[in-house]
Length: 413
Image (cartoon, rainbow, N blue to C red; front, side, top):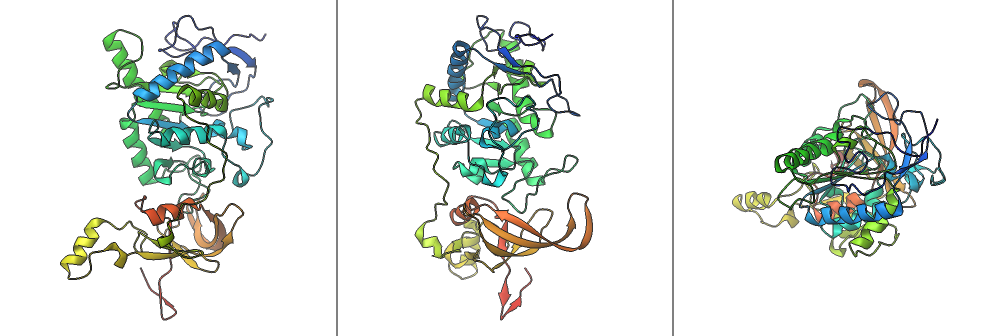
């Protein structure tokens, strides 16, 4: 037997479906799709039923979300596959095949959704400070989010040094450190389109949520807290999660719809769907495909301290004397500076239609099985946003540098 009302879960039965900041007057969301399958089979998950808030409740929830955002000082976005489904990239948790599902396309051809563009606009307005992305699709960057504000914790299609992490694989060390820092720094986490089925990265939602609940219990009151306190975790999506009882607010609606309403509530213009192009100051563009970058030959950011060392040694103190050239013209040889393929070399084979660089590397590591094998070639994509980051010096390290040669011979780094 199917019911139009959701199953009651969680410890707090006063606000079982809306979060502990919700109103007693809000109607429960309506079940729009019944599905007895698990959202993520084999993980800590729930059934893949889908729900929708009424228009009135949705409006009030969005107003509350807008208030939380304006009070937050360190808001973190935590996104999963559900954020990208309307772009045509399939997800794991949706089983129903609803009318909202977009036609499936190649992940590399996908363009940002309204939600990607809206979240990027919130970042530009200073309302979102950081983004932990479980997806690999590069859609936040295509929407204009700076790479330095994004942690692609489970791997990235557009970063050769950050291959997609297998289910039983290990997270990259520097990305895990960033994750832990933001776990304790965020005062508000927006969980967007993720089933939160027990991945390590879920800590960015659970920690701030538990801190927020602890504060509410100490104060013994409800209502929006002031900005000195932990605001908690917000879930945006059409399915339940195992952490619903921790949420301060759960919005049951399509993500694009929520973000459209949120921008209106905050009086922020909806960003246009203009394709991303790197912002390269003319003085850093030597010629097409060749860029003057603020990194040394090892791919590390040049620091002011480097100038002081030069000056102490009697040399010039300007980083202009230490900047290197990043040559991404077809036929140029590059080397990975970090990651599981660190030190492996490749050849730039051109640019795709969206301007990203195709590089064919030679590897001897079977990454998924963690073993050495005979040399083989593999095509990687370098997102064009890394060029913008390289000329502006916004990352601690860039993914690739050119292979150093002297007199036609390779120079060891």
